[in-house]
Length: 311
Length: 311
Image (cartoon, rainbow over all chains, first blue to last red; front, side):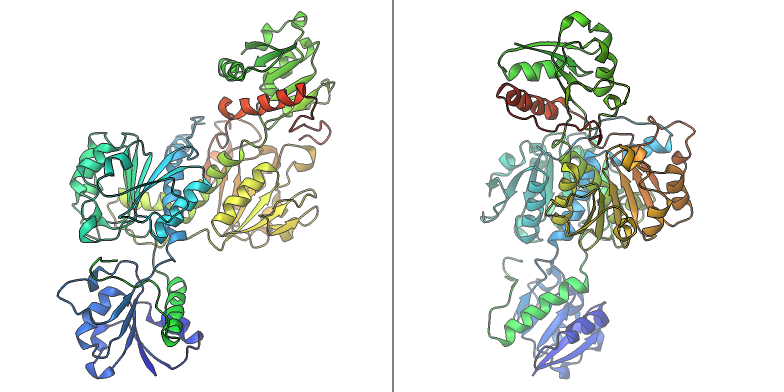
């Protein structure tokens, strides 16, 4: 018998969804409050938000496996924390949401959606020609499961796709790969740069002044990944000086973005308040259910996190 | 030797693009002004805008074939005009532009792009959940080459697709077809209704009070097709009473939309001023070039218009 603790602000939804799967040999407890976890509870499996699990970690005395409900598991990667359990994150479920986010904003820019609405508000028939994605070039910083979904949508719209990865070149929808020191060649001639990099030591400030300077002035930067990847001061500088056309930012080094942060007032920035790809229980519960079935069948779990690599 | 007249406001662009194709046995003349055409010119082939060609029609004494640069050829369909020539229109080139238009506005709605921008302007971190296209249902009024392109993009985003046609059922991306009197069943439970119907006698006011009443109140109507298809008073009434959530309108019964027209002030209307899928010489010239090669090879031309059916 496995003892599962669901520790999530959506604990009731997850309990309902997991119970409905009638998983074998599983006792289910659920809570939204890590303070309710006692050392004597002896949960061996935990499903929930990394930030909540971190608080209960010292009292999870029988812990074997954590299924995170987020893609980002930074709260559990602090080197001062224990790593004596298997950690799996939520992957393969954010691609379609991310694709709708990224291409929603790309198309809004091409179609001049804000400008057309302003013309309408002024009562003006506005025949200004929109642009189009077809034939334009997108660069993906990171080509995991989310990057692959974005590449697929980009190809659907007739775009050319460049990918920047640590080494992998497995996505058939990427036309050209770049690695390591190739950042300038990767950035050259991009119309859109999208970062879906995880937050790791190797990705910190990967989008810095040098990378931004290698982009053409017409380029738009979109970040639905992690705020730590961006040198925010360098980004604001590039936007203010017109060396970058615009930025669509979902994530920030500090969230919520502080009231007095300069990015609220930087020209040509759109802020979407970390809503690009929300973790929805209906999407995430099936990841846990599939992994639990693998566990009891003695198969390897999917989406295991490497504590050292950070993803 | 064929004598081609290019009659277009983009005459110079078309002349350059057609000349570059080095078509055999072809003399090319070009003008942006139909008044310059003389009866003695003896052009047998004309490439251009239907509205300009109409003005020159009585003086095109040797006319055999007209390639229109638009999809809509209404100016040439007036029953009082001659029909003693082959008329082909521009097809197969608007699908990708229309797809970017329609899905740009669908995603803008799902992602709450206007609301997020208003939150940003107020300095508010806005965690409101966006919606998503995946799992939603789109209805296409008309499934020709443009409708097929929209259906393909809808399937890419995981939507269910209903199609309303006169009889054709040839598009593999349409999940369910409806015809004739099935309008209410077609409209039932749609999240989005998109009209890409041509302007014909059979399509006039196809989107009337009855069809709008059959849509659920959450539905959004998008019209990048022809304004004549919509009963505009019934549409405004449905929007004002909240029986329809929103409308995105590119085309109107009268264009430009008159300054005092009620649609400028109808709630939840977005107006895009007939820019959804502009005819661009780079897209259209290849259609003419391909058809000219067919002509000299004795093959049937593509995209022939049936004067009676109107498309």
